[in-house]
Length: 358
Ligand code: PEP
Ligand code: MN
Image 1 (tube, rainbow, N blue to C red):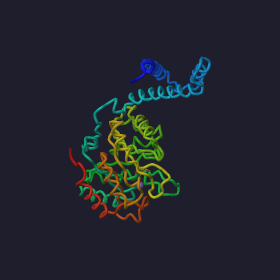
Image 2: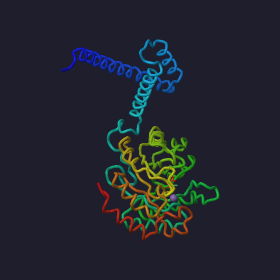
Image 3: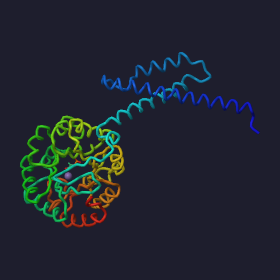
């Protein structure tokens, strides 16, 4: 038998819970309005002075039975939830967000439709070294039905004494080969001033991991009518990655492919740690296509095939991998590029697993 007094008290508690619920949601609505005003004014959402004043008010008015520190802790959680609510609203408003645009963005690269459910490969050497070197890889890729050819002409190298790339000469080689084999070319640009010239030679501007937060470069790439492949920064969170893409789209260019290429962690068995779960997260949070670069994420030739399988299985729109006619003498990334027979094996193992045409 339940005690009538207990039932009565519990009923009162339930009522109070509903009142608190109602008040917390009312508070949330007001905070959302504050968030909108702050966005218009460009002021910071988090205001520690204001938060301190609110905590002081609680202290001054606390008549117990709770300790002030306990109440302040509870209120701080409410403040935190409200701040997150403002961030959610902001995220909803991002132009790259799925909440802003539900359908997939399809990036059209010379007729190759990236983002429509079909899966693609971007193949080519780490660096453009010569016409013959690029042509040999292009011929092998083309034979396997690959249409997207990569090659670095401007190489962002850790050491200034390492090969820096052939620059414009490299772009000219890429264009010549691409025209010859009817392929599309993807190449990294590191300097905003080079974008204009590059437009005549390449089909996709790559923004490399080291430049993911080079905001002037992002703005410049966003201001032209050319698809962009944006790589995730070495130590960038997904949120930072999404915001980097926002820089590009906010300038008017929505032809963006995101590329997960591994992040820096304490693990030394691989060059970087492939954050495979970033793929479905990015697909869910944004409407942009997502690629996985298996070469730079692993830095290991023996892991290219298994990680590419994982990328395709998890729903990536494509895989990027580096191929060189003679990796042992490559001027960059010689440890992980595939030679042509290895590439043939790689692609023939993957083809049955992926969705080639939609
Ligand atoms: C590249 O793809 O050539 C490259 C340098 O990769 P990342 O920017 O991801 O290191
Ligand atoms: Mn490389």
